[in-house]
Length: 180
Image (tube, rainbow, N blue to C red; front, side, top):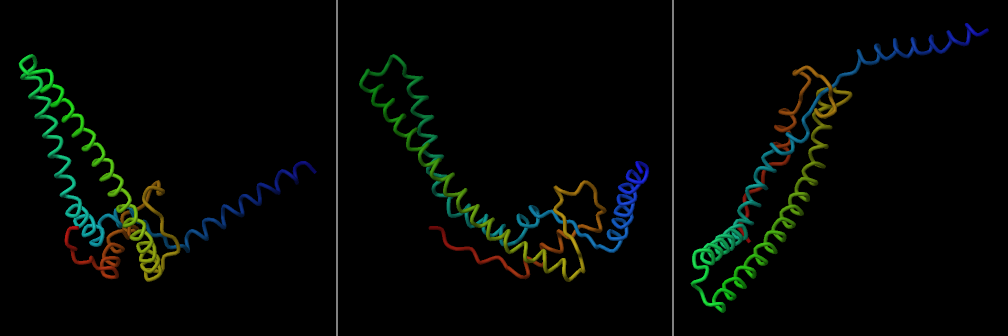
């Protein structure tokens, strides 16, 4: 009685193991580096260049403020004891005002860039998933695994470059827009 109840689960496990090998032999698998596919698409590269151009004046303003702050700090150090207390207070207040302005501009810029980047990547990722599905169906793949989740795979299984090419064909990069 005990022997029969112990063998039955072993037989089930052996059958599942054998069936698993048969099923995997019939399945076709592809591997993709989804992050690389999205970031290497022409659309994302164009969007990145457009964002850089659009935010360039704000970056330049922050850089100028940082230079002004450094000049004020340098001037205060070089002329320590030579300036009147009122001149020193005025320069210090000007430096602090510029520091606050630079910090506020930096925070606003970072938030705007992050928000826009996330919107662009979200839309591109959704479109990329559709392209992956189309490529997988065209190649007769049953499963596509993202590289970070694959412990090991053979190079011929990777479809990243094919997906990038298909994505670029389906979603050509938009012409650059003028800076706002």
